[in-house]
Image (cartoon, rainbow, N blue to C red; front, side, top):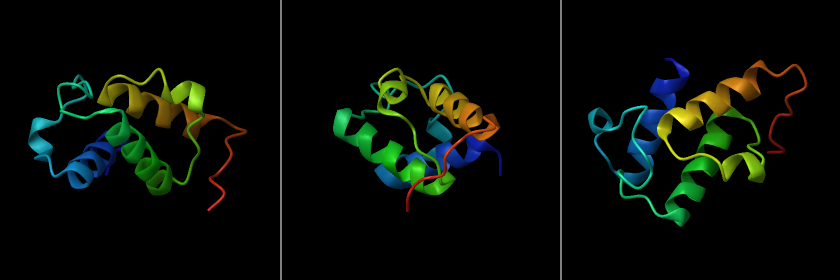
Length: 85
């Protein structure tokens, strides 16, 4: 499963949204997600991908594609730190 597919599946599962309605261009607002929902989804994705998304990076995430891109950058980083869990 690709990073994008995993992110979409996690968002769909966490908020009971049909996965086929979630696209890379979808904004959190379009998906009906408030800031708490976004925080919970990012936490779930950190667990799913075993990474830490820094707070300053998380603030700039506006679309599903932004999340996918950030996770791919973290995974490609030679000094990426796994989550502390």
